[in-house]
Length: 519
Image 1 (tube, rainbow, N blue to C red):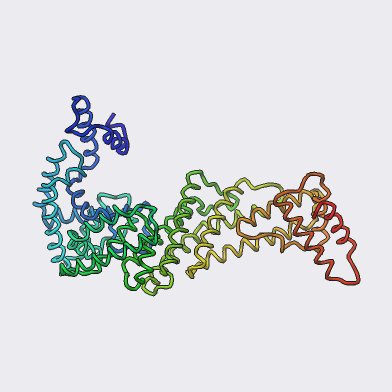
Image 2: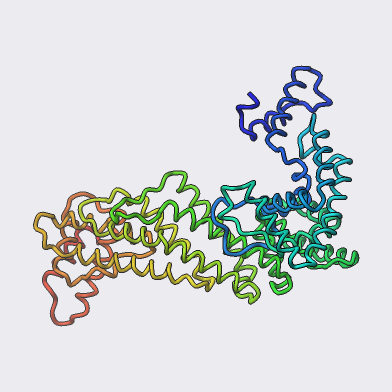
């Protein structure tokens, strides 16, 4: 059973069992040992796990798709740390790495890796590794050739361990090594402060209150670092860890606004990097679901899981953009290059497929007079999300020209569809069916925040005939049809009122017909 279940279920089973000391039943004890052994087997790199635990609050998941255009300072990919550890263990301190591996193999006989690395023996060895890593990496950074060689080896070790992500993860560079040294050097001071902040800041804490407490804690941490002869800038790991582990956008935005982005450059950069990541993930997911097709009439199909992912992604983008605006980041000169790179990457990815594909399917949906296109609900979903994205990004001042051109084209498609639908040249189609088509066009226009009311021509004989057919139909007029009839009747009366001494009899007849139906 242990070998057939996924790790998450094994962990839940183990959590429900009594501890090793309290397990009186031999069967329970045996079962617990099997679960522990299986979970530890799934994590053979135990020494690497002990090393990466030094950066627990600053670790981030490896990308599933291509990396975003900007990187967050003081945030480390798990794969990058694994590559750095393997390079250290292979050529810098192989004896110490082997000692760590042997110790953890012994400690993990009856306990999980995460429990073993918190034992006094493991903590003492981890501290030795920390000091040794800082010393050796500082020596490596002192020589350019050694730095390039080490980064090359670390990247190669990472790519060998994660071959499926080798093409999408950028190479490990000297900047990451320097940040790693800074964090490890200040680790004894910053770790207690980070743990306390994470412990006392729940995910849905009041942003203003949490922001004030974050300012106080970060300034205090900076003073402690200066007293230890360490750079005070490393104190920014505190708000960055809160952003990384809690996604506390409101609290960190309040912190940046209180201190000014220029005084918290790395936190501001980390915030923009998080925005860049969310926009990048949204664009990649939408590009996967609405990719370009060789057949222009190929329906756009979005599965239920894709809709859920896109909905969650756009909600998170909406939240973080609002937080960035409150923090004043869109007006901060220090992050303008990052913001520009983020916007350019987003527009390039959207323009590469989703905008063109959704635009063509939208045009097909509004022009088709016979019935709904088969993918109309999916088209509305995709177009609605892109319109929402444009609405969210417009106040930021970012260059979103591709989105603006796309939306302008949709408005033009609606106007063209209305003009085409109000020309009664096909005698086989009744005016009432044309009205139903206008309803469908209005439904699609609502998705882009528009309406066909201003486009309708009250002086058009054909348009009057179409609306008169709906007014003469006996069934009740409600919803979208009611709004269209109301607007068109008002436009007819306004047109009649423009002429003082003569009135168009067709318009007068239509106004009287509309009045009989309550319009």
